Image 1 (cartoon, rainbow, N blue to C red):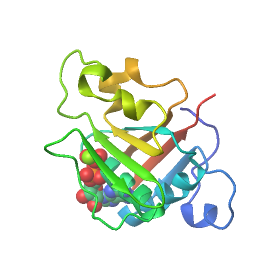
Image 2: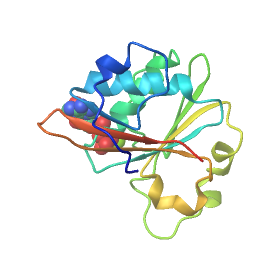
Image 3: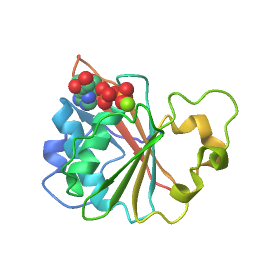
Image 4: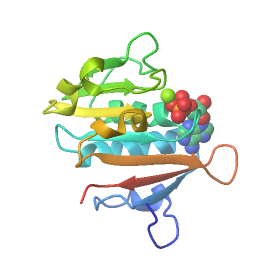
Length: 161
Ligand SMILES: Nc1ncnc2c1ncn2[C@@H]1O[C@H](COP(=O)(O)OP(=O)(O)O)[C@@H](O)[C@H]1O
Ligand SMILES: [Mg+2]
């Protein structure tokens, strides 16, 4: 996840339908949502999207953008009492948050295997590194980190292969 070149502003990137840049600076929550929405359009059904970044980095915000893109009307928050929240829009969105998962976990006992194999939509996983052994090799990885200023986030996208 060390792509060359300067960050690309989403406003410039949004002008065309080419694949998203590997690194983008988002200057507000809405810019992060808009970037996520564009990524959703690139993800085929069954895509596992691993979201990395500290608490408050913007992972849940990113999932809100995915939800917007597929036409989910329900508000998207963090799955607090469950591991998985499922949303239905034009296709599915499974929002998984492994934050509360501690120690050695396996996807099977967490009931994740149905989501990790042929889910009819996008599977977005916060704190995916807590079950990294079980993430598919062709998962996509998104890393959010603080940028320059309170509302700036650097969003790095790594596609498989
Ligand atoms: N550019 C930005 N992108 C995403 N979130 C941002 C941005 N700027 C400020 N924020 C704020 O940061 C917080 C991110 O929270 P959240 O998405 O729940 O993080 P996480 O799920 O990574 O813990 C929200 O309060 C959001 O409003
Ligand atoms: Mg979150």
